[in-house]
Length: 524
Ligand SMILES: Nc1ncnc2c1ncn2[C@@H]1O[C@H](COP(=O)(O)OP(=O)(O)OP(=O)(O)O)[C@@H](O)[C@H]1O
Figure 1 (tube, rainbow, N blue to C red):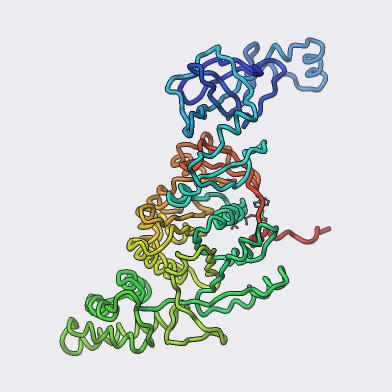
Figure 2 (figure 1 turned 90 degrees about the vertical axis):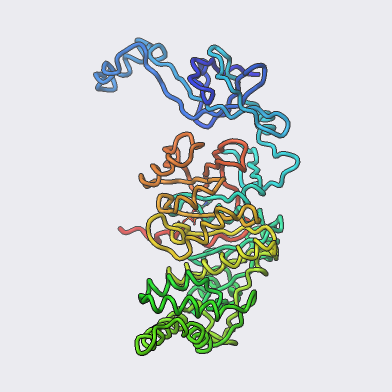
């Protein structure tokens, strides 16, 4: 084993500082090994610096032309004597059977530092024999595959956090493709309509994945421009089902909140709504789909007995009637009568149980909806999924939520936040996993974000987001690293990897819809 340096000091059990021997080049990211109690412990270099012990650096500031610098370097030949290099290595641990063992004592000063061999690295990153893994890329700078524990990734939730254009949806696509071959039902909440491209394979392997893609356009919205762009780019028409939601599937608190936010509600109207909605939705599991007129009549009839007497009561009832009709007729996500169509296309009711029991990739294109309708849709979908999951009526399901900070913002209001938070908190027990994707980590609700036990970071530039990440991601050695990442780099930390890893993200097997447009011409 090649000895490449010696430990100078080790201030804690987590890292040590070593001096690479003369002629040894060490880069950040290099894997090295040391011995602790006879076991070889793997470590990763996270910083390299040149230290000057012989002179005051201010002396060098006086070397103000090429001639002087060359004279000092070549004639005096003191360059090597002036500086030495030292590196910081973070202890990753040693593999013992299926587990990673981390020594509970610091590395001894004067211990030798060895170059980590390929086989040593492969052994360290090898998956446990009893787990289910997906390969999402390679350890950066090596060809060692990065295998992520799929069960932990899915059920303990994950988050992909990075600036815009840093490659979040590319990576989400890689994860979804690999998971789909394990026959896990996957639901993608796609506010930008990017993921329809997964229905077009990019490689042979991609054919198996794209056959599993089911696209749903949500609501009565015109998506001709999206379809045209799709057909032009891939030479195939986009095939989708148009879906909507039954107004009766709205949870009462959510309905009340929407009406209050949009139009305001008096106390009397709230009381009538609470009673009336309970009556109108007392059909059990499958709520009937009726016309809005019938539904509103049922609500008013069911709540009339709590209305104030006389004219005030009549006013409250009429006001509530108007508000309910406005909401259900104006929002494009509701189906307002049985057999409704839009531009000749039938509208189907969403069927969360079918999505969460079939091993497909269900892509919900929400791009035609405004932000409130997107949130209402997600609230209803997640509410139904949660109810089904608690009754063990679904398979383990992975739900990818793009732009998660819109659906669960840290400060602003959102009707979907409590539904995301509930699944983030309790979904693991029922096999409901989330993948939260956001370009503004600092704007994502903390309760929701903190439940993501695997965190994947990509390039991040915004100082607020970096500060936030430094506070929440204990395992991330130095958030400044995130500023320097390329599009295909990612840092993975958390329960589904043996140690924090800098990875090169793998190839896509299906098409990526989020290509950043290039400027066509130079201006002369
Ligand atoms: N691993 C990769 N290998 C090659 N190209 C990549 C990779 N990751 C991303 N890209 C390219 O980088 C660009 C941006 O990627 P992507 O659409 O995934 O970013 P994003 O972070 O999701 O952006 P947005 O915030 O706008 O949704 C795309 O053109 C994509 O093709």
